Length: 91
Image: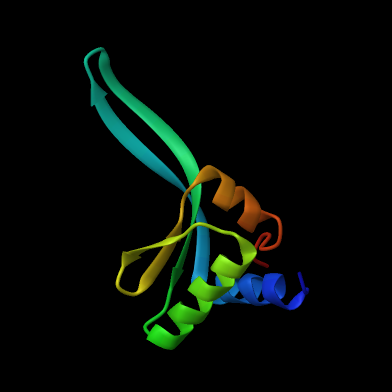
């Protein structure tokens, strides 16, 4: 894999993306349970930019979906771990 794709993904997520912790509340028979997991979001109003992001994630083997018409979500554990390999923290 060329170094261009990971660098492009890093640039996209550093400019219009975020890595956050998703907290979910679940009501079960034995009470309320909370669980947390990391996820990435990328938002942009341009359909072309969103398409480029999706194609780049596909090329890198990162599972993603649209959570809104202008937002890409990466939430599966293995996909977040893969994205962590080359996105890194924002500075």
